[in-house]
Structure formats: structure tokens, C-alpha cells
Length: 126
Image (cartoon, rainbow, N blue to C red; front, side, top):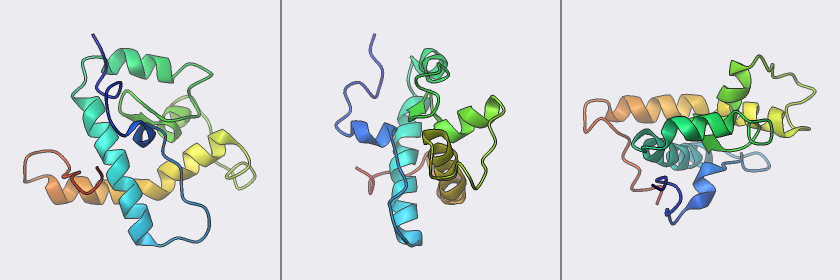
């Protein structure tokens, strides 16, 4: 049994990072599309729960999408707090900042497609 991401042509989608520098909403929306693509793949994967559990391990919790959950969400679930001090200086800070910046774009994407097929149209992302 293999996971949906194991054979995917775009493995980097499971390890998103905010672009460096001052970028606008178009770049954030494009990043949100890639994240939505990965999360949709996770949500239909038979390995989702085991993957999430692997993502909660200390060596994985600060990085990537595991079991359809962003690193920032996983960190918050164990009590991590984003401060201005660690926002860019640590992997955990960067992961939590990514989730904070991208979340409104993800919500917008899912809202736009809620009345369609039930998933995000990620054709642009691939």
C-alpha cells in the first residue's frame, strides 16, 4: 500500500515555503493552490492517519504537510505560539507564519468551490 504523495510528480507541494521578499496576493494565491492540491491528495489517501501520526513526530512536526495538515496547524495543536522573535528565525516560526499567511487564501479557494464538486480546482497548481 502506497500513499498518494509517494508517486506524485510534484513532491515539493508537500513541503511549501513562503516566497522570500515582498510578494503580493497573486503569489500567495498560487502557493495556496499548490497547498490545496497536496491537502486534497491527502484527504483521499488511505494512509492519511498514519501519515498524520508521522507528521507529529519531533523530526517532522516543523516541516511539510502530513496527513493533510500543515506544519503550523500541527505545531499549534501541541501548544506552540508564533511570536515576532521566532517568525523567521526558526523552522517552527516559518511554518506557523506560512499557515497564518496562506489560510485566508485556502479558505477562499474552498469557499469558491464549495458548490462545485466538493474539492478545489487545482488544475492551475499542477
